[in-house]
Amino acid sequence: MIRALPVGKLNSNLLSGLIKKCYRKDKSIIVPPKIGEDAAVIRQGDKYLVLSTDPITLTKGEIGHFAVLINANDIVAMGGKPRWFLTANLLPEGKTTKNDVENLFKNVAAICRQLDITWVGGHIEITSGLKKPIVIGEMIGTVEKNKITPSSNGRIGDDLLLVKGIAIEGTSIIAREKEKYLRKKFPPSFLRKAKNFFLAPGISIVKEALLANSSVKIHAMHDPTEGGISTGIREIAQASGKGVLIFSDRIKIYPETKILCQEFGLNPWGLIASGSLLISLSPKETPKLLQVFQKKKIPVVVIGRIKPEDFGYKIEVNGKIKELPKFKVDEITKIY
Image (cartoon, rainbow, N blue to C red; front, top):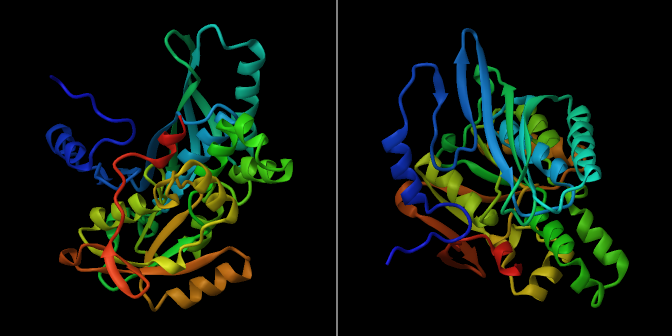
């Protein structure tokens, strides 16, 4: 009997094998496809382009907002500036109205204007067999050669910093997808705040990544998404061919996130984490970056250290070293 694959990201071993089989080398490709890399960098003459694509599948509300920001995050995490955006919009048959389409367009256009991104094209259709809309975005940006910050460039001895807290996107999705149920148990003010987590603290890391890369020398950046902060940490370490040690008590988890995770039996370490940013840099650069972020009142903390590969992926909990949690699928899937 053929076993169906589980919901969520493909197993990293399977995906890595497929990339090795299918990738064709090209001298113009500076950052090629690799586990943990969410964008590619291509040299075009004396210029460098950054390209990334991501679908939005886990939320119905504000889907255009999510599509722009999630794709922009991949570009800035590579050190680039988002410039041009395309979307493929698949909308469910029998459920989509003219008003829905107009709202989607307004939503995407507004966020693009806000970030000085030009929406240059794409595709839209009403699709049979869908339960909810899917928006697949592609973002193209530009980057200077000396500012490229691939996930694969973490170095032994680097500090690993976390900007903002974890599970920001997951918190918003839970509150939106389970709003009817949660209304019966929590006050409107709590639910309103949790639903709006995509705005504040926010799922965008554009401002934070651009600020970091313009302030100090960054080795690597990564924006955790599916599989949560734990998966994101593993991805930056794996991409770099390194190990990592994380100090669990330094990870910021918002009160609303704790409450909603407890309600649905979820582990916030494995909950979709857009809005967080991981930065790997020399300890010599860390004090300056912390100072820059503190002046802007942006939460940031050193959560760990990049180690040799044979160290593995470890976490310190109450003075004891344990294996960093591994999530085969994102915790958000448990609410559906």
